[in-house]
Image (tube, rainbow, N blue to C red; front, side, top):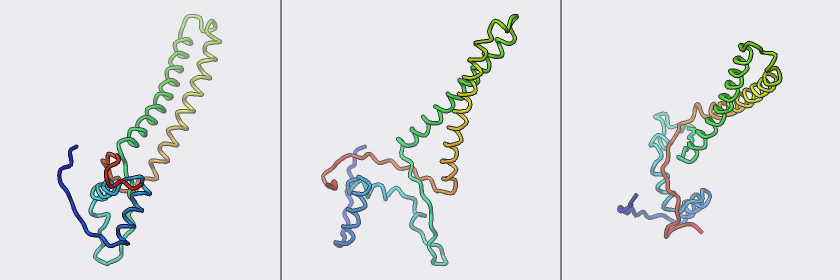
Length: 154
């Protein structure tokens, strides 16, 4: 994305120090930090009519994090699918003309099914638990391309 618009602002020394410190803590340049802040929804800064600020819980979701969540969910789905596949194999062995012939394979597949389904169940529960903690949060999608520029914080 080509950035052609400039924005100038005057700050006192204290404000500039806070800006630099915040950018440094996030590993951003000052410009990236200001771009980041500009993407926050206005309600993040609003004060209700009664004058009492409300604590809002924001979760910032960048595309890399969203992608990692998707990969983890897919991984647990794959485990679950492998367990179901093992159960289907067991069913086909049991429905054959001579299930005794497949006794060892049935035992192996039943252990495999149990392991895959249990790992999948535990992984899915852990993922759901982490996502549940976000249910009252405002999800904010941010689009920041972090790269060094001329005002980067050392």
